[in-house]
Length: 94
Image 1 (cartoon, rainbow, N blue to C red):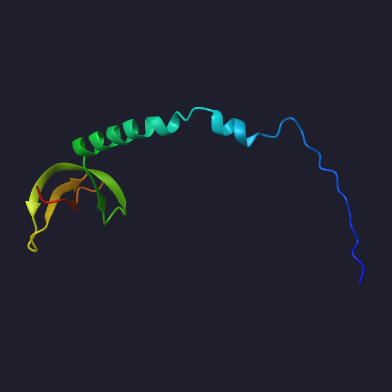
Image 2 (tube, rainbow, N blue to C red; image 1 turned 180 degrees about the vertical axis):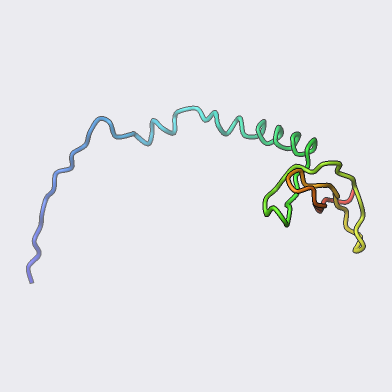
C-alpha cells in the first residue's frame, strides 16, 4: 500500500474578507433592533391586524372592540378592510 502525497497551492487574494476585521467592526444593526421592535409594537397597538379567513391574509381591523368569548378568552372583534367580513383576534386578558 502506497500513499501518494500531493501539494496544492492556494491562491489567496487580497479581496477575501478577514474574519478578525469583521469582528472588530461596530455592530450598529443590533443596537437599532430594540428601537425597531418598539416602533412595530406601537404601530400594532394603533392598528390591530387580524387574519381574515375569507381573504386568507392579515388585514387591519376596522372598528376593533374588546370582547370576552364564551370560553372566557379575551379577543378583538372587528371588520376586515378588504372583504368587510367579521374577524377576530385573540388577545391577553387585561
